[in-house]
Image (tube, rainbow, N blue to C red):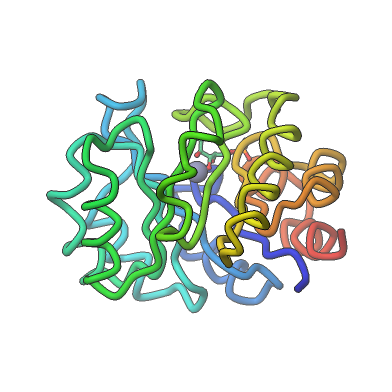
Length: 216
Ligand code: DX5
Ligand code: ZN
């Protein structure tokens, strides 16, 4: 399987989202990554339901929502109604993670679990069979444009080992500081999906940059 590319809309031009979403539609991007922040779980607030509703009317790619919020359970059904295909919650923000995953599946969405840079991969050993995607955070969540944290390569290979040992089909997604250099090393360590915000949107030709990531 070729690597999947999920541009993060957080780095787009919010004064002209239509322009950037149409670029994503034309591009080789596989998913559109949406970062939802509540100002409580992370020290930043991004965008919420009305904006996602507008995005949905334009976006032709599957929508991959990364929830950086507390009380995710209260909002699962609303995300499903807004057309989200994959819903990722943070390990650190869910007290009853197994139940949360079950609810996401009952709503017909793929379920993902994100791990902060300080959260070890082995904590997933009793839940890995139940999840479709693990999102390894290679920066601290909350902001785009941060420096890639080097130990993320090791975490990706540990996760790959766990997935092979448990024989699950879980995808490994990596988020934060992804560019052509970090992306190539992440793929070598077992990553299946690369999220990229600033590297795509701050480039002179975002569509071409997505193509370059896709070639890795
Ligand atoms: C950070 C978000 C990321 C962010 C990545 O909390 O989860 O998706 O947009 O941005 P870059 O690629 O610029 O590090
Ligand atoms: Zn994200």
